Every structure is written in structure tokens, then in C-alpha cells.
Length: 123
Image 1 (spheres, rainbow, N blue to C red):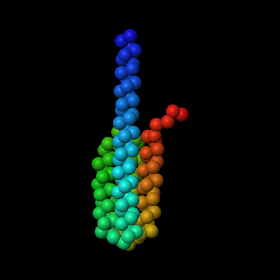
Image 2: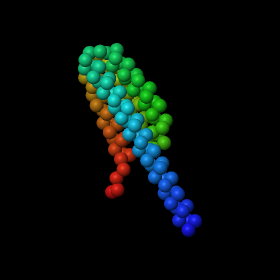
Image 3: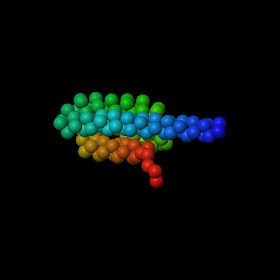
Image 4: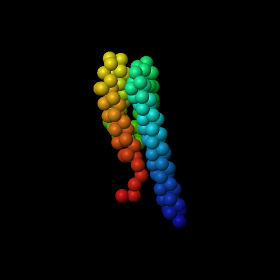
């Protein structure tokens, strides 16, 4: 009977860790997506200073997120987003809006990919 309780406790521990990972991944990717949407909207409106500010906020936010997310997800997947974020502010500063919008879409697809890796499914 003790083994049964130990096994049950172990399964609960694993489920808790998994649920925590899913929560953090969804939270960080959602927040990052919101920042990117704000930067994109500001760039479309022609407000480069606000767009640059949102890009810098997104980059700083992702640096913090990398530390947590690398516990749950392959680090190379997480670092790709960070590397892509470092290019956003310079693109806006140089007036390369087409390249900026393409980079934002790429990052958003990467975020969707990261979030979908942590989606719970029975299959």
C-alpha cells in the first residue's frame, strides 16, 4: 500500500510540474505576442519611437522569459525568438518597415510553435 501511495504522489508531482510548465509557456508567449502586436501597430501608425520602445520591452521581457522557459523547452527554440527580437528595433530605426513586419510575423510563428509544443494532448 505504501508503494501505491508513493507512486500516486510521484504521478501528482509530475502532473504538477507539467501543469506549471504549460502555464509558464502560455503566459510568457502570450505576453510576448501582445508586445509584438503593440510594436507592429505603432509601426503601422508611423510612431517609430513607440514601436522601438515596444521592441525593446519585448527583447527585455524575452531575456527574462528565456531563463524560465529553458527549464521546460529546448533552449535552441527559445533562443531563436531572442535572437530575432534583437533585430527588430534596428529595423525600425533604419526605416526597414517591410523587413520589420516580416520579422515580427516570424517571431509570432515561433511563439506559436513554442506554445504548441506544450499543449496537452492524449494522443
